[in-house]
Length: 471
Image 1 (cartoon, rainbow, N blue to C red):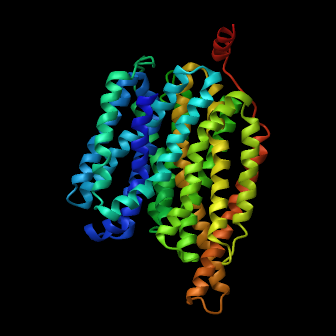
Image 2: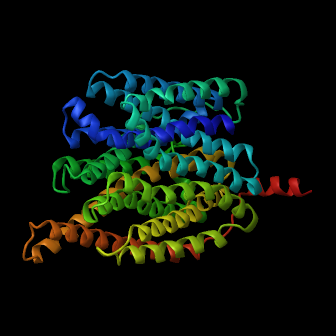
Image 3: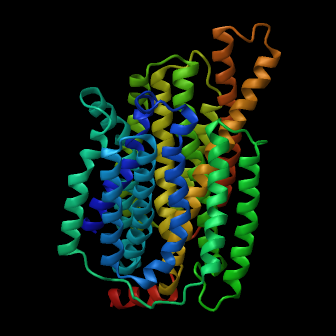
């Protein structure tokens, strides 16, 4: 577990490290904002394409081979980024980094399911939650400190020794726990999966950037191709004896419910990460430093309480965490939908902190509970599906809520007597964000209703393990 966590922490940390440096990179490489955004969009796209294939790869390669291979790929990408002489090389390095990151998370979650019995998985998954939430939370803060003293290349140089240490540590301590079966590779499924998930992530990410609206051919054609390919992919998986990604896991009711709750949580989380900085900087005129400080407590608390929620899940099950968590989400989103120019920075810090607590109470307990219902042979498929849909939900959430915010802005400015004044533009941004959070409130209410249907689950195989342990 330590081997896996060290590698995953620095891989995930690198996802948010670069965002703060975008302004510097625009000036250094003489490119525009939509182009520089590809460093984030491309990363998400590659992860979204690769994760579904991990279910197949984990059947072909051992745990050690998968993890060490992924970390070597990530390290190579990081070195390329650090020495990149131009934007194209930096983007290539970033995409190689994404290949390593995309392989790491499903391997880590699948390993937890294999080495921990059901009654201990909550605590283990909670520790993973600390990595997933804590790393992105401190990423911008660390990035700001590094950029204050050094140039952007040090964002990559500093990660390299830790990545190499992770490879060396795993080479000594990481054991093989997965079973290598080497199933037949269905290349049609690989192509359909790549077009399906890649098209959806690319389309929604492009729309969310603001560089291309929903009516742009690049956006709607990518989404249409993605959905058609995804339908064909699911149809093919149901016909194959050895599917690349076994979608039959959705016949387990708690896994299906888990999927919906995770999609709602990821859409809420990522849309908030985008909307709040835009609101604080553009609408309420706070500095970049103060905006970063305002969002840090929520991210830190989210990471720190994930292990706690994991242990509580082991003791009390999902209902006593997920129902209060979704209720906190509903209340917080209601407050966010009623903000104004007079809302203080302290209020935003409190609201964002409670939002982070609510999401921490939902995500890991729900995810662990859904995966607990699966049989051992379905673990790689279940983890790959959940990780993939989280990437897709993040892309859709950002694009969807940003477009709603833009609509709210347009409605306000169309009714304004002086739509070009600074004050009215700020008010329009607040109006747009309020509309987006109002729609988010609707999603949170759906999540709360679904939470009442959740119940503790365990697979028949795991039930036998528990009986042996209790005996």
